[in-house]
Image (cartoon, rainbow over all chains, first blue to last red; front, side, top):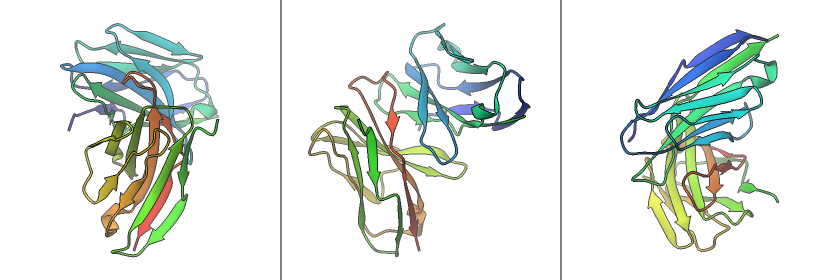
Length: 112
Length: 113
């Protein structure tokens, strides 16, 4: 079992605020790091797949960075909107395996 | 494309009954996965498959079986259902490489009473 930690567990921000969350994973044996967005009553949807140390990816107002040497990734949301309310999951794939190891997620609530 | 489909959407089982959760994908993905999601616990991998005829255990395989006779289908079998198997089950698939995103089905909500 590979330990993937996400913080904070939950977050409540006002519309227009920028926010960020952290995903920590084992720094050794790294292959890839995934971020998913999971809205209530729906299925998880992929945001980013990151494989290289120093990777930065962006999709609209959401961006992510990756530090494989120290074992963490940050997800940033700029100017949060109510439709950004969801649980954000990160998942780690080790070099020695095929399967995603998910963290428990950060639950984001954005209120108008 | 329908993507990843799962049936049934909901099911209630009695203790000791068996059932098969169906999963199919029409994206010609090699990799397929079964997860369960329990409140406060995140997604846990039950079984996965990297191609037809190849399956392997994930983190929580006990009480389940899988088969992969075709690229499209990856059914999950529950034998002798127990209350601990009450959960939401998600099937997912991805292209042949591990750094490709996974596509998830809509989920099956199973209750064992």
